[in-house]
Image (tube, rainbow, N blue to C red; front, side, top):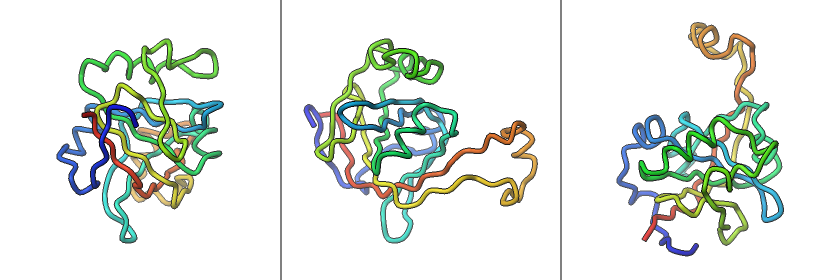
Length: 170
């Protein structure tokens, strides 16, 4: 990818709680013909089944969901603070109605596998889906989470991604 170099996932220096929970990320999926992105502040990074992994959750009513379901891979893009307005825009507007990339002032490029990624990011993680499942009401041990986050029973789909590539801006 132009302007990026690949690093091993173990070389990441970011605090993942700040990276995802405070700084936010764009989840991007699709192919060269069509793609979409959405802002997310829920997810994580870790190590499962002897793989470095990322996990994200996406509600089925989000337009990006169609792309994450259709494709095997997605990217998680992280930005410097100057891009906060673009991330906010991507979290409040739908790609169903407009070219959200152009409206937010961001552009797409593609990884070697053809997965869309955001050119303006400082860090991009490309992952391949290895597990997915809907969150289910009966599996919540803390029922207060349902009251707080799912009063309409619109549960997220959770995706576990094997991290295949990590790119940092040069």
